[in-house]
Length: 366
Image (cartoon, rainbow, N blue to C red):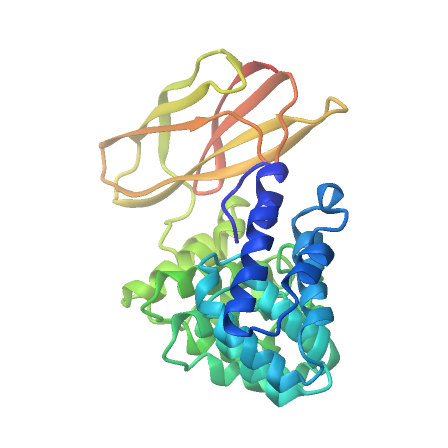
């Protein structure tokens, strides 16, 4: 997925220059291609469309201009794929598979297995999961053992219960055991790209089946650094909520025996584009070594004046008896496609092992 950007910047992934390149590059690999017709179809009403609509429009244009023979069309796109050189733009190829290949399951699975190496098939595979979950999951379980990290990631990302920018995989929302064999196979994957997907998939599960997830993760070998990383990031939502079982699973030792000294939120007055700094000193009051998970929360002001609490990870550390642990974090306060700021007082909390230990805040003018 693209990094957090404004919606205007995201949709320009499919600008006229990109679509012209699609047309010219396709003609280069298949000289009979009607590049001008493709470009006209792919740019029709372009300015009024968002990123996913533009991607679908490009796939529709390919559907209209490539040969009717599905296998021949896939061969042309396979020759085109290496020249696109943009991961998200290449998702168009996977969308073509949805348009043409829903009734040709085996050929479509082979196509997604190839195209996901250039641009993820995570959105395209959802339609196959919706039509035939068991058959599609059986293929994806095999993909979890693939030599290519992009294919392995597709096995996890494409079967997420709550994949962003796509519809829910309702069967997996209701029954997380459906995708568990994929996740279990990837629990020690050497690729960070894959591990992030596995953690995000597990985090999806935590929102509907927290106790089930903690029970399933408990036997995973956390002396393996790859597995330990997945577990920690998979449980982030539960940890931020202060879930005792999740905190225990990542080594936190219950209620923190400590007090906060010098909690600071600065500056007190901010404008969009300014940098916020949160700092404090954690002073141990316990007689034994503790494992602490520190987070902080910002209560963002909504349009109606209410607040929406967003928790951010800060630091995990061991706190010895009598020790002092300094904490500091800085973040840029600016609008994203997923968050628009509103003026007003924003409360900030510091949490240790899920418990709020100090409060402050800042006034934001936009």
